[in-house]
Length: 295
Image (cartoon, rainbow, N blue to C red; front, side, top):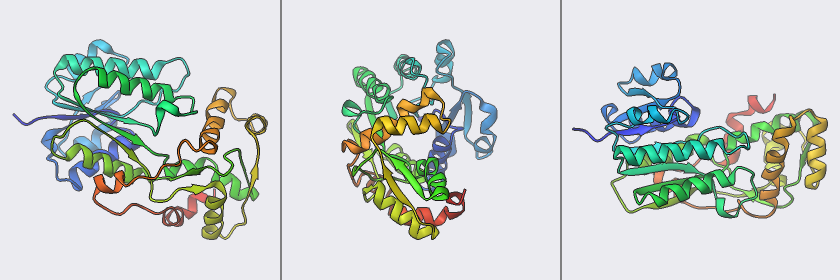
């Protein structure tokens, strides 16, 4: 019987891209892949490629037994439950526990860089999940995903429209990486022959300050853009004044604080090695998405 790999969160952007790369870039047979989602109805396109689909809901602990039946390897794509009430960590713990009970032999998990020393508000979710996975004694691979280049769309269009980018990141640096590059790297890690447990930190090839990113964005779009440096309190006040919902403000501010303190400045070649291809450069990415930057 063919060993089965289940990818959770398969209807999301990352999960979909991982499966696409498993099929197209690493020639994994569709019969070896199971796509899981809380709503399998969103997996019609994947199912049409011959991939089995299943309902996988981490909030339905009883249902996880059936969801993981016959699964040899499991890729847990971290959920989007960022309610500050510990929901995401509870969900992940339920998935890991059910996987071990179901006889899964290897776990893969999408984490974040440096969760043990991060200022980002949801870092404890990732660190706690990593610890739970290691405690199972199962072979595992942890992918610590760097910041997506796509995340820049949360700030750059508005900043370019006004000509000012408000930031408390100071001179801290981030090596942004395109989501598709992360997906291909994860697929490469999953498709690779069995090995000892490992942790990979997936980053882009170059780390930039906010000032340097602004300079590149201005060059690509032809629009002037200056960075207005604030402290965390000023940034939070500005977000509140701009109508950002209060529960999200501490998390958004923590992104900049974490960058400023140098806790996400690492650059590794893990993504390029796992994917087997050259990574997308930031200027190339912004050029390709110039229309989205225009707002």
